Length: 222
Image (cartoon, rainbow, N blue to C red; front, side, top):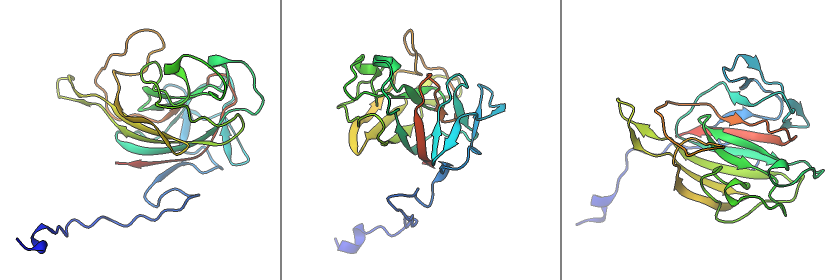
């Protein structure tokens, strides 16, 4: 056999430009520090997002409710930077709490887990109430943190039966904390997760009453 016989030339991967402080050239920018044009409020998405935009960040306003992207997605790479308040108020789940929901249903927990003990499947970078992170990579309050999330949506057949579960990889501040783990179903605060057939869904950011901030949010559908 000749070396050329195992060379594959097509298809040629397309070029994507990258920079450490910018989204990849093929990404959809969901928040660039200036506008909430990509976001809406309310379960039905009928109202504009009412969180505060200041100093390049998007900050939860307690009582205004969750916000969600106008776009809906299935499989993707998601980048989010977040910061818990510098002033420490509360403890456990009451400290720097928010969440990022994949397809509007599956939560990657946002929490100030720096010297703040809570149940392990509810700390920062947990798949809430389902999967414990491999390590705690949380920075101190007031410092910007990053989540890089690789999301594979669950699959259902034409009859609505589950074919394959959702899978997720999470890198927290450059550290692998969730390694292609399966989820048992959508996030539940009380009860056991159970799948129900669904299609693409939005990215949802949670209002848990704490002024958590977000910036540099982008997504690459896969």
